[in-house]
Amino acid sequence: MKRYETVIIVDPDLSEDVRLPLFEKFRETISQQQGELIAFEEWGSQKLAYEVRKKMRGFYVRVDYCGAGKAVDELERQCRLDDRVLKYLNCLT
Image (cartoon, rainbow, N blue to C red; front, side, top):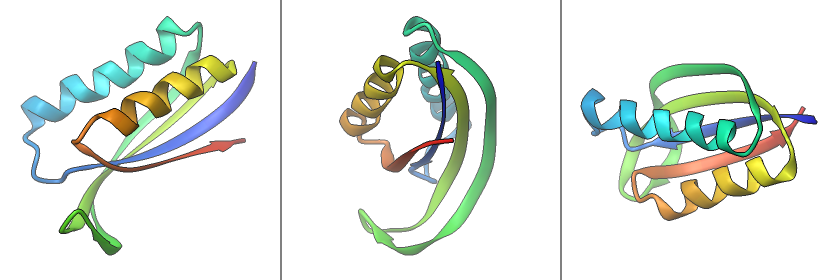
């Protein structure tokens, strides 16, 4: 299995009650695809370099995991379809 790192930026206006289930969905996606979660870090709300969907701030999350390509594909698919996710970036580490 290869090791990946994904940085996800979600809408900063979401309450913690909405953010936590969203983050749990990301964790479950990795485990359902036979991936192993190494680290899940909430970096908090930070200023964006440029405006994204009329937002100048975003709530950053870093996900470090091992898995096959299926885990990356499914995580990307969920990020792409969820309107609460402003941006995401996957890297092979």
